[in-house]
Amino acid sequence: MSKDVTKLHQFLHHESVLTLSTHDSEGDWSAPVLYVADTTQDRFALYFLSSANSRHIKALADGDTTAVSVYSDYTGQWQSIRGAQMQVTIMQVDEHETAAIEALYFGRFPEIKALIDNPQTKQEQLIGAAFSKSFFYRVVPSFVRFTNNSDSFAGRVEWQFK
Image 1: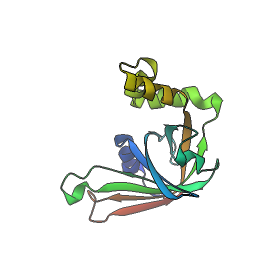
Image 2 (image 1 turned 45 degrees about the horizontal axis):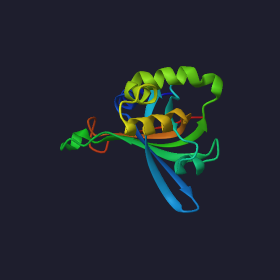
Image 3 (image 1 turned 90 degrees about the horizontal axis):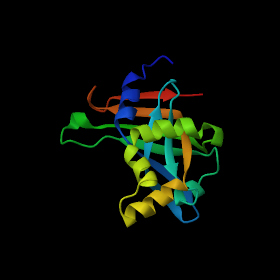
Image 4 (image 1 turned 135 degrees about the horizontal axis):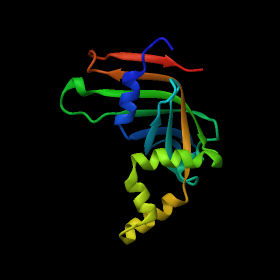
């Protein structure tokens, strides 16, 4: 990997919402999901928790290629525009890997773990019950375009992963 991935990895650790694009018989669809990044390798992986019955998961066969994006909040300054557009493969995490992914995910989002383990309201009970029946999914990039206006206007770096 000849291009430095440090800024991309930092960005992915700082942000928390990934938008997943899919297509099914009803048309195009996008869904925001909370994710956690594992950047221990240059070809990083992102993980999210979702119901197998959700529209975005049902639209994907295990191993399908699709598009996802992650963007920072705009702060009123053009230099704050940062985002990653990716072509990815998404697959359900194998059961034997779940404990490690749970530790990573719930370490980043302890409030989700609290909804599952100790809901305080009826609404939280419903949300927690839905999360407790959900599965973890791995997002693995094959192509990434990272836009970082703090480097330069429309500054972009691209990576192909094999």
